[in-house]
Length: 488
Image 1 (cartoon, helix red, strand yellow):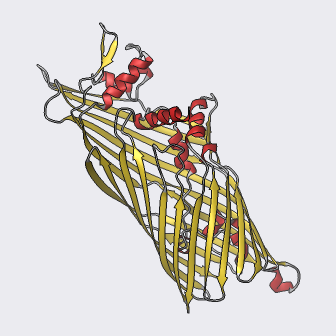
Image 2 (spheres, rainbow, N blue to C red):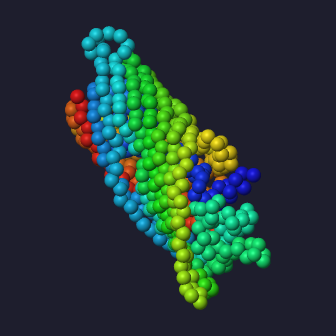
Image 3 (cartoon, rainbow, N blue to C red):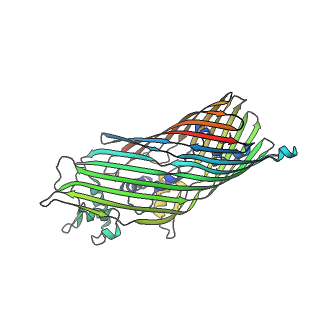
């Protein structure tokens, strides 16, 4: 049963039936890859028990309790994202440069203990600002020769299975099947009452470019306290915002002029997704000894009450016959409003403080991606939510980091592992991150510089995975973040 769900999921992902959300959309917006200040990135985000960094407010809000002064931070984070693909023995690669802001944050410190010199309440801190949670900027290029079939044959198969009426195909499926039928890339035989295409047995060069950009950022409003320099706690009200763009171009062309009439097809698809959500995070850090800290936090599910997709597509065909002609069809602009709930999270961390010399820390994050859910006023997401439930799994993410002090300078390093969220071995999306950085700190000023390298391999199917070989996609991201901060 689970295997059949995976097959269905991959077919939906590959064919891009453009008028509905998919399980992959839920995963994309549920998989948070915390970023922010250069110091936070330098330890690969292993701040669950360390604290005193603005970006830790997005993971363990208790970190705000360790501040003993007010602070302002600003981070820029230019990124170079590259990808390489392998499909049917052919390889391709591309890259994209993006300039982004990683963090802007303010911490306001209230210190009643300094005034009264009594009581267990040492500090109360309030924080406001935003941290980057995901970067969608990338470009993937796929190229190869298919001698077995074409995407139009997968369309014809589905249209035959659904027994789509020719009189309704363009009105009922205006973003994909209707375009193929309108440009004669898929045609109907009245004798056999079946749909066919010219490139049914392949012999085509297949090219696809997928250009994505945008980001997911979160506005964090936090408050925390320090009790007797031993117990620290904090609460964050998070307001994440999603802005995601995807533009893809898929092309097929006759390899050696072996297909009667058919020369080429060009299918273009454009999607814009945006939404704003809310969540709560609560955290604790306990310091039983000066050299040891324990941290824990829980994140409620993030509720996006007003997600909106807007999309359109076009398809162009070129044929050679007694007249020679080409045709192009455009879809209408599709718009759909819906709601999304992403999974609950729990985190735990340990930190070992080596006197005035440095620290070593480690975090574990639990998240079950199968808990994500779509819903809308017409409750039309039963099938997709079942796919989410049966396609993804719970595992966890691990982050470790270290920082060492040399006079006013800091040297940092970190590693993070984000586990594969898929149940089936048909796909894998493990992600690895390595980071290193330096910092300079004096009483009222600090500056940090960090380089972060990430890698992820993934299987991608151009269309129906029972017909086409997978494309192996390797993503590499190189980010150089710079933070400047002031204490007062």
